[in-house]
Length: 141
Image 1 (cartoon, helix red, strand yellow):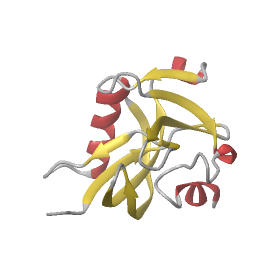
Image 2 (cartoon, rainbow, N blue to C red):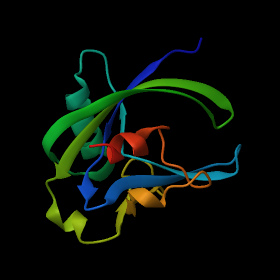
Image 3 (spheres, helix red, strand yellow):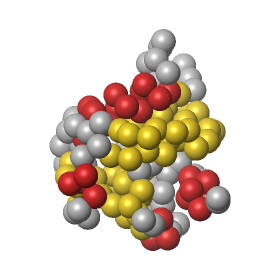
Image 4 (tube, rainbow, N blue to C red):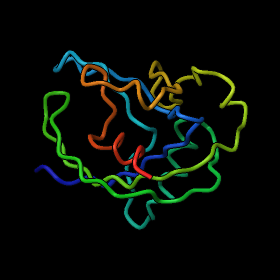
């Protein structure tokens, strides 16, 4: 039975750039981008989850973590329907070397998934930033 998934996403910035991973949905023939993060486990706070996820995915600790908003995301991807409640966190990366290169590396627990800095203005309908509405949330003061 389908369920709503609670997730926590980190949005560290480098000027106008946002740290994202690049992925491809073959069912839509679409390349897309999303901040790193993932599911919130039972009994875990959203902030604890985003910190854990960034350690698991990139091997990095977060500094100055602050909640920017909460978004509801109802979508169709990879041939199925999805429904998420996404807690969005601004933060800084503890490893300053990650700010010095455009391609940061790959997600540690998902080899081949590239992590990169990408300008907020570069996302388009053909190469969107997910969840929908995140770019607007990040542009608004």
